[in-house]
Length: 76
Image (cartoon, rainbow, N blue to C red; front, side, top):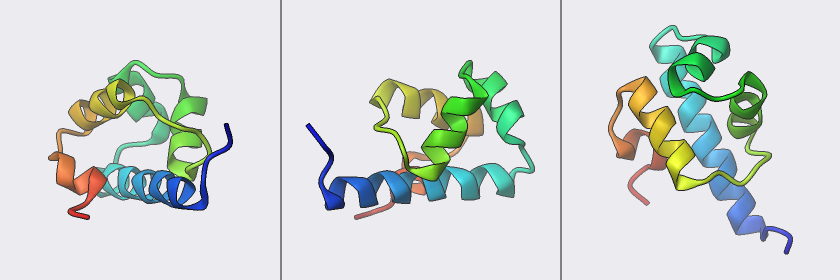
């Protein structure tokens, strides 16, 4: 089933937050992929908001970035 516009916006929001937190820590996409044990292409797609992400994948990224959930998911 295709994603709704609202769902796509949430994924773009999440991806932008991950990118912001990653760059604030001077971590490359390649480094984040290694730290989170993910493929670099997966990180690229997540940051672009172009794929639906499992919560377990977000957890791996959150731990790799060592940042609180609200920095990635916001307070909305």
